[in-house]
Image 1 (cartoon, rainbow, N blue to C red):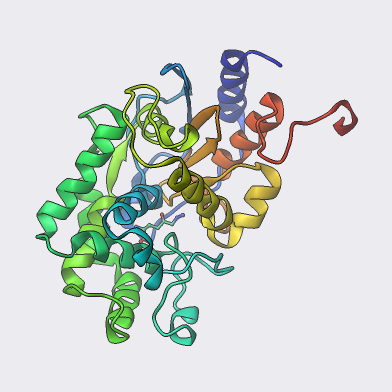
Image 2: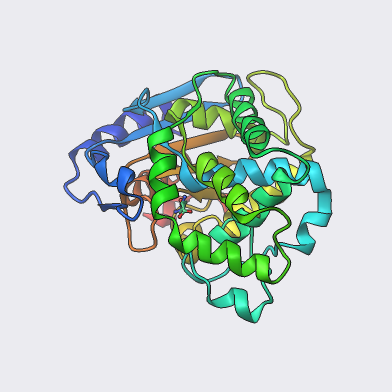
Length: 315
Ligand code: DON
C-alpha cells in the first residue's frame, strides 16, 4: 500500500491542476462569492495525527455537513423517538425537494434532506431558547474538533435568512402537519446558523473522527456516542448523505459520506480514518465536484472502500 502522505500530496496537486471545477452555489448569495479555485483534503487518523494537502487552513461553510452533527445531538436528546418524526430511507430527490412531504404527511424521508434536518433542529431546540440551542451545536463541534476556532460565519447565515424561501416553505408545510413543535422562525434561525458554521478541512476531519472509531474520538479519548450509534449514523451517511447522488457516491467512493453546498464532504473510513475534502464547485446534484473525485482517488489508491480493497484484476 502506498504511503498516505504521498497519496494526499499527489491528490492535492492533481486537483489544483484540474480545469473542471464544478459550479459554486449561488442560491445562498454569500456562497456565490467564494473562489472556486480552492481545494483542501485532511485525513484524521487513529493515532490523533492529521495528514493534510491543499488549502487545509482555510475555513469554509460546512452547510449540510453540519447535519451529521445535529443528528448526533438529536439522537442523544430523543433517542429512537427521533425516528417517529424523521425517516431513514434515501429520498431519491433533490436536497430541498417538497414533493414527498405531502404524500408522506409531513414526515421527511431522512435527516439529511433539508426537511429532515429542519425537523432534527426542531428536536434540539425544544425546551431551549434559539441562542442556547445554537450555542449547544457550536460547542459540540468545537469539542469534537478540539478547537475553539470553529465559528459561525454570520454573513453566510444572514444571506440564507434573506434567501431561504424554499426552507421556509418546507418548515411551514411540516408545521401544518404537526411535525414541527417550535415557532418556525426560531427553528429556521437555528438551522441557517448551524449550516453557516465555518471550519477548516483539518478541523472537520477531526470532528468526524468519532464516527470512524466506534463512537470514540481517538485524538482526545472522549467517548462521544456508543459504537452502535456511530455505526447507524454511518449507515445513514452511506445511503442518504449525498441525496439523489448517494448511489453514485457509494458506487464511486464506497464510503459513508455527507456533502454540503459549500463544497465540503466528510467521509468515514470505519476503523481507519475520517476524511474532509473541500472544493466549492458543485456537480448537478449539489455535491462537491472535485471533492468527490478526490475521495474516489483516495479510496482507490489506499484500498479504503467499505466494499473491499482493489485487486490486481481491477487494472
Ligand atoms: O438549507 C440549505 O439549502 C443549505 N443551508 C444547506 C444545503 C446543503 O448543504 C445541501 N448539500 N449539498
